[in-house]
Structures are given as C-alpha cells and as structure tokens.
Length: 142
Image (tube, rainbow, N blue to C red):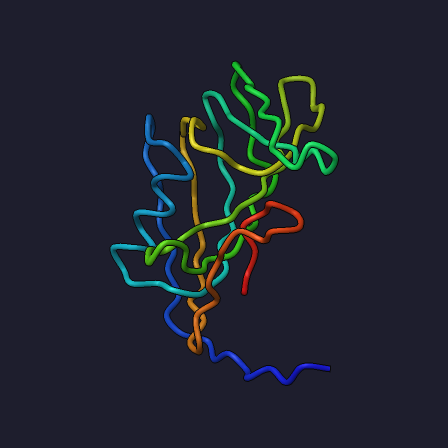
C-alpha cells in the first residue's frame, strides 16, 4: 500500500455566488484568486439552468445534458486540485426540479446561478495534480 502524507486543514471560506454567474467558473476563479491548490467544496442553492455530464466508459467521453429550467441544488460536492498550473474544481451536483425529481452528474460550464451558498475547506499539503489518464481518458490525480 502506498504511503500518503496527511493533509492539514487550512483556511475555511463561506461565500455566496450571485445571480447570473456561471457556477463552475465562479468556483474555479475563487479558488485561483485565493491560491487554493487543494481542498473540498460543498454548496447549496438554485440554478436557472444547468449543464451536467455523464462519462460514457465505452466511448471514453462525457455526454452532456442541458437542463433548461430552474432547479434546486440538493447537493454540490467536489474537490480542488491543480490542472494546467491553475486551480481546478471537479464537482458533481444533485439537482431537483419543480416536481422533486432528481437529476445529477458532473458539473460543467454553462450552469447559471440564481443563488448559491458555498463552503470551501482548504487542505494544506502537497497539492494534487490532474492529468489525462491514457487508459480512461479522464483527468485524474497523478
């Protein structure tokens, strides 16, 4: 089993993302601007529309699903690492529509915020770096 160095808890951030912002871009920009290289992100709120992804393992590519209606963010969870020398947020969301039906997947750009409340926990230690894995074609920690 590989030996892993522990991470220490760093700064904690709680903030709101305003209406009309792209959720993933706003999260990534916040982390980059605050030099967060490793961490955990959680959130709740509502979206005006969303772009979600499902990874097709046979085709080795994401199939995107556009949700063109308001939804509630039931859960947003993700991690922060480095990709291409910049802070990178990898997040998944569970959404609910007006009937309470759940939708979910990987968060992609194109998810417009109505309001979002975000919690970011920075982790201090050797940052995780993402690069494309040759076998899966996914951007994974190396």
